[in-house]
Length: 485
Image (cartoon, rainbow, N blue to C red):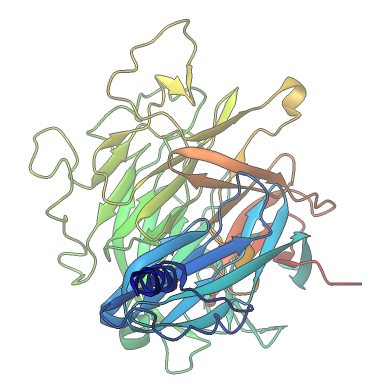
């Protein structure tokens, strides 16, 4: 009798300890009956397969009671409330290869006292992108943008015209033409525009250009009753920055940040080496990143100073300044809570600075520093200066480039495996390159081997987050996946 009792105890223990389940991709597994009626929680085993060593998976598990857990490898999640869980996996890219998960989404039912397995199988394929020409015969295109969700493209021509591309056709009538009052000498011209975050409601957009006196001008206009024509009489000058003496280093970018404020990046005033010392002069708006509030702009008060600007109410310092120490920030962009700010170098280095969008008062070093090098000196005082996260040397005879053209972090839908990659080019070399910035490190540097497009003037982003680049040859190219033969 005692032997039978002992045997029943052993069998009960085995059933409790060894209960589990399995399944095939797409179903999340079939849970076994609850082997422990007293249990109130269960377990989910997420198995990620097919990735080489050192490459992280990208899996998110969600479920009852607002449960959410992000996983980078196979893992057992225990203590889960009984119910249905969603296991969603995203593609990951490493070494030029994209690993696609199968299935991308599946369900797994966790039972109290039970265990269920969801398998995510990754398969690799080489990523390849190419350029497709979408607009030709433009007069020196400098910028491309669109309101969020809008299918049109708005392309700027340096002479002072904004052109509209609708359904693949370049409309003959410009959206706006201010060519009669734009200075196009040197590096001047109509250089960028930004749609107001409330454009759908107020119709406001802002342009950055140089006037006949070589001033940098930020001006607001309003869309007309015809959505493809702006109201040319609606001009409101927001800011005019004197830029005497030289015809280079006007900067050129205007953009709204995630905080709703307007940012702009004037260059240092021109000349070689910042002869007027504007980059480090906090009483000058040149060689800076500026931040202003235009939400209640009027002719009497076209902008106000945000309360969190670092030099607000400080004597001898311009309150508009958000960051200093820039040479020629031709292009910058925001990616969520991050700012990607490229700065054109002098003789040796091209740089990209990456900072939190709310990091006020950064000094990026020019003209004490050029990238991570002391400028024209064996040593220099680097205290308080922010060094670039990424840079490259010009190389002998500028073999690597001479003037960075900053772009955007990709967040479109057409190529989800490239999400998070920052695309950039160089005016002198016309390449298309990208990198991934994670945890303060630069990884996955990639040359996409495009050619024959001429000097790359600028990148652009449409209303769906897809990326474009503009060539000095008058063409606009869309960056997309290489078609399968």
